[in-house]
Length: 452
Image 1 (tube, one colour):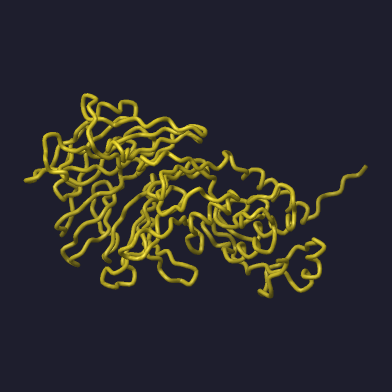
Image 2 (tube, one colour):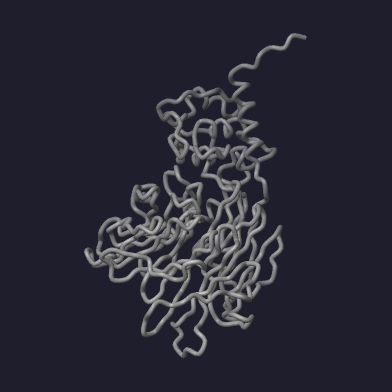
């Protein structure tokens, strides 16, 4: 029998099928309750499927560490003071590789609750921290907020941005024309530190960074930087984008030092804060009006048109509803396509293979290939899932999924491809929808949405 070469259409479908198989999730989505006493503020991933979280046991008031493997949670380990003696305090951050943990303990013998000792723990020696020296102050106090893989810890001491390493000790981070400053985060190798400073020129806080010790202002608007990706490329924060006298801070991030404003579907800046960033350009935080509790946690993947509510994003990717109303996502880390998050609104840990809405082949671009996945599986009843076109997560592949794809169509996303018009089912295709027949569609003028 003579073999005939595959047609272009058949070859395209074969390649798309391979992409779907390659992009199949490596681990099942997980949502794990850590218990009502957990107040988690930092996370590191030691291996795919294994996570270490740090924070505070809100019942005992002790800095604590939780380890998660498969679907089990190890009881929290107390991060003690020197000599193994528990002291009330908080663990604020953990290095990306999980080797170091930093935070603050109530100062021994002090009757003032705001006097703190900065503490650095090794993950393998949680009962033997290093207490870092305070900078000179009438009421000395130091709070460490983050730490690099090299053990460089950053935070605040005596209202001054502070850094500490075991080799050089504790020193103030140099600033220019600032009355005070704080350091909130450091990248993986310790070369990029971010935070905020009270700038004397504009008379308000501004987002700042230190690159290899060199100070610069990221944004002269009323602003702050809260998180930095391990590679140092992405910085998460907030800024008074519309200059309304500090009445509202809006969600922003900086890529290579350039400010990016996150907007809703109408193009309006989103009130809230970005708290963390990953090397892949995933940004997360919360949205909410000034003076109120956070309304909603959100996720943004670079190249998307606008952020998406965490609850909706989780439902689309997993087909399940998240167990709690997530009001904030204070920390996250990404590895090998898996995103690990700590969530507020309840002490939860979550793990999911990330993707942008309607990015069925998970190539960081919502384009014609993702439309073809939907079209090839339209009204299908087997293997229904995100990778086969169920972009809404409702267990069906129908017109609602097409709408999500069309609303997020962005072929010039994070991995820029040749821009094209949104493919739209033509009037000829309308007659074929009922029978489930599909033709390859060329890009063209938007006409009407079909097959609902």
